[in-house]
Length: 357
Image 1 (cartoon, rainbow, N blue to C red):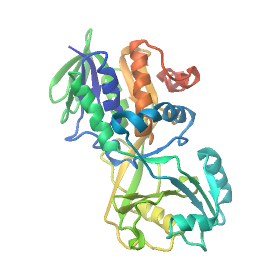
Image 2: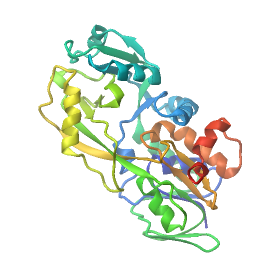
Image 3: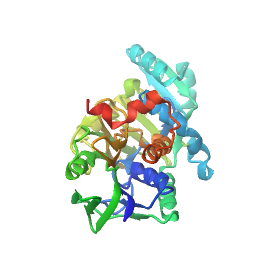
């Protein structure tokens, strides 16, 4: 009998499994051939402490020491630069306040990122407290903790049926029996809940597209900051000598293996091109991921009030990696009845009961 059976092998399920493996036996089930196949494998891989709603920022702050120091650390300095045109002052001012970034002159911005167009750029701000996350190593290290504590991490285990008769019985590629079921299935969490006979939390998967382009103008982009347009209307960041550009859309959709929308991608690239001097002439690749949200835009963590052996680890949105150390620690505290490191007002913003009133 497994103590904690976890459905979902992305960052949510792996981090939860690593924490819970100190308190009982853990098995993680991933439907695809590889861990992190869907949203976790298509992340922008950035840590920005002030990015997200208040509960997400609290999780970011609670977990940053882990990301900086555990296993040698997972963060590499990147930096963030907001850029805006002449007619975007209000959006820019709002972003500066929310992200707590420091305004700089357009010329200072161009000195850092020489492709910025001096005729189009009117406003800029920077933060040095933005970092690339080594997302693959973070997932693999959480999986290593699970295995090191005697647990299992299994792929090609798509769940097809869930029932309960004293304990959970889950039909996937194999049959699994467990005392507790952890729902970390990303865009599919409401489908898992339905199979388990529990009400949904109203998860909404939202597509975000991405394009990889050659390094603009042949520049060495390795030390450039991440660029973000006003109102997060687009972003761009270096990626292994290439450049990633996203339209930053949040298009509601259904759970599926997402792919980029060509028109949306073209519109986002046009917004990026409006403030740079180097047009996009070729895409090397494009893809999309699903960022899954509940109605208030923050995470859902902890036992379901109708059956406390059914545990939610859901609603990560675009914050899964940066919140994973603290979110998984908090989840384990709720399950084991130990004190959480989070303040009570933040705890109240994360539990599932808020969505059932």
